[in-house]
Image (cartoon, rainbow, N blue to C red; front, side, top):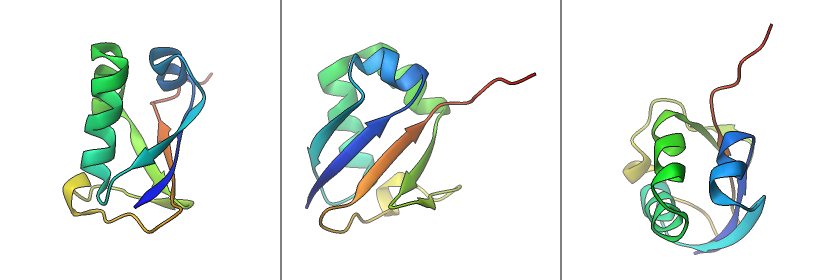
Length: 83
């Protein structure tokens, strides 16, 4: 499957890009490939991040169990601070 991964805030800074295409059938594989491309800094963000797939929260599901449909948009949302 192929789709688009979007990085927000600290994830965008760690990846050095706002978005990129991906190939993969499950979320865990897509995230592992992104960390392999962009390094340990992104890995740290991904460990704390939440994810949306086509606008739906992944929640506490294991990323290895989250199948991605063709053309999916995965959003990596690091924790946000507010005041």
